[in-house]
Length: 297
Image (cartoon, rainbow, N blue to C red; front, side, top):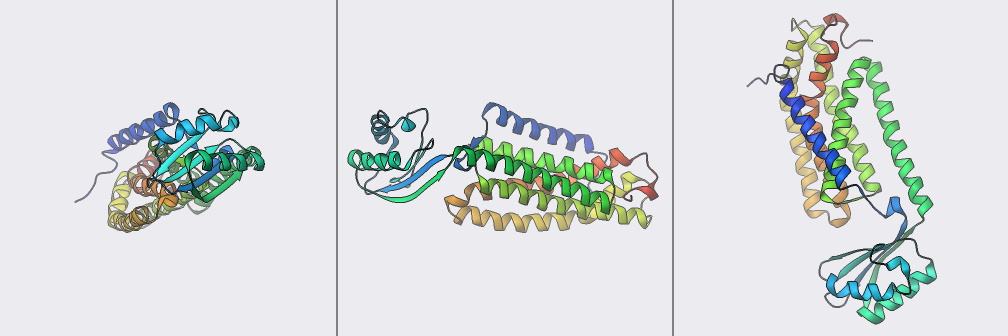
């Protein structure tokens, strides 16, 4: 079966536009749930000896918040898992205030084991946020430079457009799921950039090879032929990666959930954009150029 990429490009562009609009809608209306890494504050994870429910815990925290305002209902975030494991996130507390909270919690809610206690200053959180944005921009800049040197600037534009498409959908998906955006999430986004661009470059390389060997008389034919020649390789690579990532998602535990879920969305969307988005964009940008000049500086 031969897929007619260029003939059906409007359908692929429409599908991508719908996904991007849905992702942007999730970002606008639901917003990004920044984690402790970016907002700053305290994270305390405890394991009670007895089963604990939110309806039992919230009145206790409300009472403690009369002395410790960081535990106010509007400031804290509380999560209960496995029946007796509780995670409390609060704005930044001093060491003395945190110790008072721990003492009050034990007196009012019962004995527990402290599993985790992290603290990130607000200024450190802002710095991490800025550093993460810079890391993403530097990654994109280097990708543009590499593809421009290896192919041409129009190929770099098409690749970056596909990458923006992938990242927006991945971030929107995480926002829609309500997962926390933390430093592993940024690592996952950077991994998506690398994975997606690898697939895209394989297709670009084949387009240039087809044109060089004059296997097609038009750019549309060259794009269709190249995508179909690399389609099986792209699908097989993505499917095996998908299975490996899925296994980690199932058995990797809660700490890897955000990283792996982001990666899972990125692998699926990155494969799609490499095949059905980047190549048709190349056609639109280069369709009026001489075939011998396409893909070269």
